[in-house]
Length: 113
Length: 115
Image (cartoon, rainbow over all chains, first blue to last red; front, side):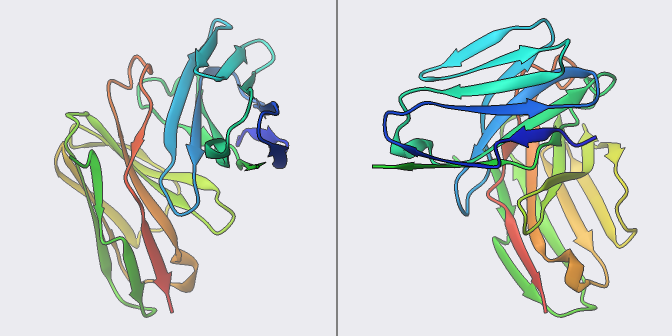
């Protein structure tokens, strides 16, 4: 039931791009993306709802393919501040009234100067 | 100004003890959650309350008991602590889960170490 994220870890140089994928075996209602820095709480980035939408947030954007039950997070022209662990949280059909999210195992992103 | 506050931030205790973690949110959200993050960073939902009503109760040992005196507070009491309970416990809140248009706001976490 837990979504699978790939890659598990990625190392970038400043200015490079990265893509983080999140795949579920269950029909999804929504996908959330969060970033957690070491020793801190996860911070909300964005939500995508069913309908195959795409969203942007500065140089971080995401897409949601409902049919494939997949979401991808795109980080362009990465900055040092992008370093951290990225989690996708999936809302399954039937869970929209509870707000329950099932999180992936996380992708550790390290941006080097 | 803190949106979701948890206390204590660190908790070190011996096996067999009983401890509580408190959580308060000032965002006016109706729904609050407890998540457990293990050493591999896996975030797993434990409980959720919507306006003081328990709506999610995952497969969690009976030693864990949540209490929500009002919609701004959600506490977690743990009896007979075991080594395996060592983890970071996050409280979170969200607005209008029915529309699922808003993300979670997490508290800063409570690092529980059982020795």
